[in-house]
Image (cartoon, rainbow, N blue to C red; front, side, top):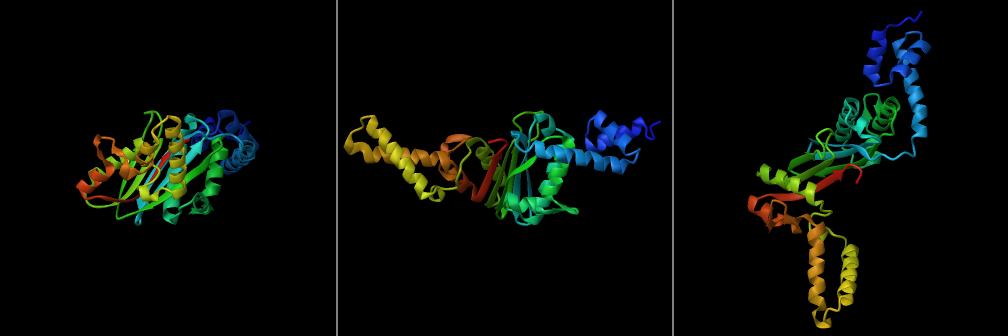
Amino acid sequence: MANFSLEDVKALRERLGTGMVDTKNALVEAEGDMEKAVELLRLKGAKGNAKRADRSTSEGLVAAKESNGSATLIELACETDFVAKGDKFVALADKVLEAVSAAGATSVDEALSAPVGNQTVGDLINDEAAILGEKIELRRVAAVTGENFAIYLHKTSKDLPPQVGVVVGYSGSDAETARSVAQHISFANPEYLSREDVPAESVEAERKIVTEISKNEGKPEAALPKIVEGRVNAYFKQVALLEQDYAKDNKLSVSKVLTDAGVAVSGFARFKVGA
């Protein structure tokens, strides 16, 4: 006769999120000892982690937090949207974000080594992956500094946690404009803050490409420098935030909007799940 009840099985399932059969079998093997059953389920899951190492993680969530003069943004990835929208995965992301922020981590390696309770973030993620039965990884981490911060988290589906996250560091008192620019970043996806931040080699590569395109189009030789310069400027408007047309009014540049509001952006980060 089993020395555990259906309520014990239910309680353990709710605690770990494991399947009915696995949970019951673990309790049988543990002779009703709940903590031993937990250990057995974790060990079983840990063996599965190695088998899942090569699987892709295209789902997940983004999360952000402001603390101690910086704002931290993370992307926690998993295999399926079913796990991504589950309470246990969301709770894991909250724990990871809290630990990463507290440690002031600015890279994935630093974040995985950050302490959380009596283990590291990396250990915590591995333990939870074993329980949830999917590959879970901390894919990206960014920390933005500034006097003030705007955080924008966007849901691409109402059934899923946020899939696009933006943090903006800025000076100034117009929080509404700063948040609006964060929303703009989520949509426009700039790579750099200003044209001066774009690597010289990237600009030179673009210049060569548009020069070749312009020549192939049969543009007059005398007009080439002006045409090329115009196309290079168009490139800056694609990749540099301050050069972009403002999403809410494309007659204005983001730079103009910020200047009029007395806001200066010191830095930003944008993550999109799976991108």
